[in-house]
Length: 266
Length: 250
Image 1 (cartoon, chains in turn green, purple):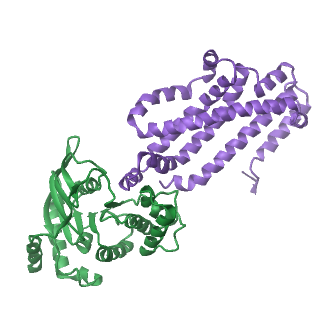
Image 2 (image 1 turned 180 degrees about the vertical axis):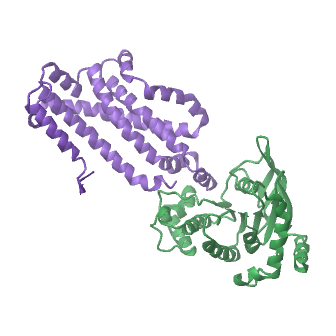
Image 3 (image 1 turned 45 degrees about the vertical axis):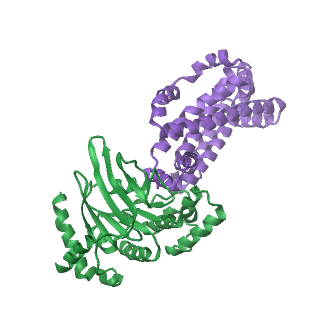
């Protein structure tokens, strides 16, 4: 327990500078309160997970940060500026990949740049670089229906990376891929957070996944939706990907989160 | 089709029906049905004659103009109806009425409004084709994957970009299906127009041959018309199959 206590003590220390701030955001769908007066800070250059049972509003919050859904009250600030809709500073990775089925991998990865008016030769050069980065070199001319689920999500990730946004928003990106691919993705995500100087906001319903990849975990609870606690794991992040899952702190935090969530799961 | 385990080439049933036609025609039961061989001989006689080419030009022009307007108006209207709840509620009742209405009955009204010329024929053709094109484009847009739309928005797509790069392509399989059926209806529309409004084109040929009991000529022109409509429809079917690979995966 001592390690968990240490982690919780650490969480109360002042967090690093925020790339994204959510200030008192509320959202109602008719009579249903999806989010109520929610505030949350997302430290720059780190990965924050939004974790909670279904119906806790984690995807709604992510889409409000993306500017896809307007908030009823409150504000979202990116680099201190209040957002009004989608912007160049954020890129989204979708749960169901959201690839254009009629376009090949190259055009799909370049599509974000295409919409931003980047010239064809330039955007394709950038896209090719990120296709290679996510390990899909040689598949540029393939179509999404010719790829496995895991490869499709690599295309979605490459598309989000190629627009070079400061903030990456990931909506349960690995939930539609198989378990082994998912583990590889989680390892790749860790090196991505380390190598790319970006802020990651990651929605997941998997406790293990959240603890494995996160610098900071925000536990969201439903009805009404609120941030119940923020956990910052400290000791296992630099011990190497293969040691994380047997680190005592990792196991303690997973147990701790399950203990606080179990009463909300039917 | 397979008969006794032997795979027959496509449309081989036509041979059977052609034979039946020939036999009934040779028996001379009715002037209405000359033998198929005689019809085909007549067909090659009239193809290339000035009256035939003139009719082909008049009909083809009215047909393609009508189809053109049905497509360039029908597809955007259908897509907008699929996107906008307001437009949909405003226009859907009218589209549903016209898609099933007996449009032939409206032709006299068109003659009053637009006269007895080419304009009325083109409008008749377009009216036959447009409604199913609208309905199919609308259906194509309504089944679009929401996250594709969100993806485009999240990367900053303008409404025009979203229209041209997402909605149109996502709805393309349905749109092509609608255009294919619309074109078949337009063949009906152009002939009805040419029979009722002004006696020109193939409509005039049908009128001429039927009233002079030239049944060989009558059937020959009908076969040519069938063949033209069938070719266009098959071509659109081919385009449809080319996009079918993603129709199931949107």
